[in-house]
Image (cartoon, rainbow, N blue to C red; front, side, top):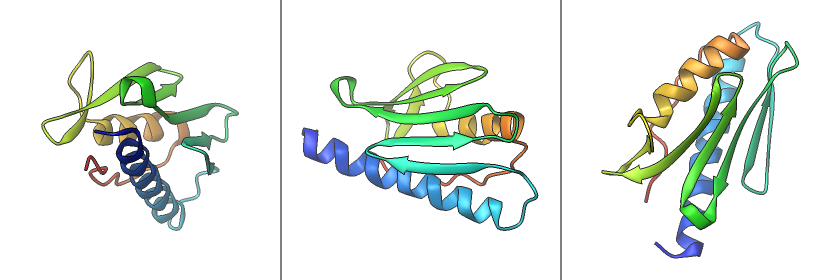
Length: 113
């Protein structure tokens, strides 16, 4: 995958996550705000905590930082998988957002190609 292809894939993945957040917030009382800027998705929760999802181009990974820890996801078998546990990013993000932000998000399968 070239640098340009990686940036395109991650831009689409982060945009899809943003759209899923908007969908969830439309029917929720959770106080969660988010912004996407230059490959960094920042989700601010009502308790002052943040969840950060950003791309790491040198390793071709998406990184997630949350209160529960830091996670690295790499494309494996057509899905973003945690480099340590093998968990899918969509499942992990849904759990983190529920635990940290009180928001139930139906995270779609994020783009890998």
